[in-house]
Image (cartoon, rainbow, N blue to C red):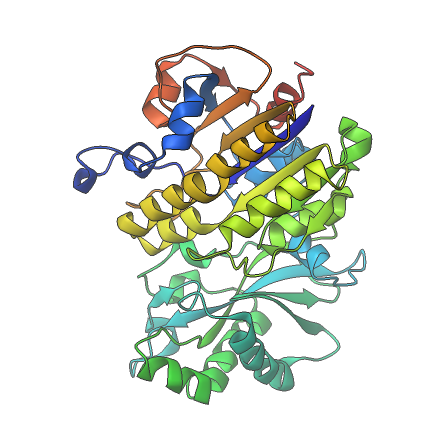
Length: 401
């Protein structure tokens, strides 16, 4: 038996008036998932424990079978693992987004945060900008490391795990109330704006109508993670397929194989087909029992507040991953169980994560089932199936429960 999780990051949502009261998931044209739902179990699963922040970090740990209350030590340390940062036990890792803030002539604290992703800037361009920041700000205490696109890492030697605001939680708000209280971090953020605001890359981006990447934003502080080995825990040889350092970091920490896919960029136009091909190869040629296919696009479109693009992201997952993946595994006569779900909702109306339970679809190619339901938030709730502890969902997939 082969096992697959297809994780559409932030895919769940609330009913939207412009979609005639439907959610992006229910509105999107998803013939492959619709066909599967008739032969699958659907329901709701609570991926984020009560009292914890609804982040992709806590939620994806949960989906992979790791109770966030036991294993979570901060988001950025997981990303640090992915990019090969040599963390000491006394280090604190922080996410360093390079964001877009308004460049109007007002005090720094009065500026507005416009875009947490700087228009999904390329890693190449952002690397040039981060190099300028490093030249001015790096020292024995603070070290910067390049990640992917706008997502980078700051290591703070003998640092503190302090509460910092996620930039995507405060879009279109004044940055003053959301800035770090730590004077050194605040000073670096202010200095980064002075370094980046007139950089040639940002002048060129503005001339093209793109958001400039003009300020570092620190968040997600945490210490070196300790995640138990996935194979030892589950008896399954696992592979991770994702463009996002967070997911790769969880994989590195748990001993899973990280499969790199050319053109996978965490955006709407990621290489969906490449991810599907990588999954089939891992399962059918390379001897892996389990693959985790993570697609960031629905989450990014939710943060952007774009209904149309979130619907498109979901349709792309269905058309280029789910449908072809099922077809190819069937043609290769592989028995498989496929779990489709988001990690958390990223509703258009709030443009950030919420902790609501998410809809899941669980298909088993060896079992005959017949239902009338369709996979979406409303019908998943009406099914009556509910899993209260998200970290137990993988035991359901692996038929341990």
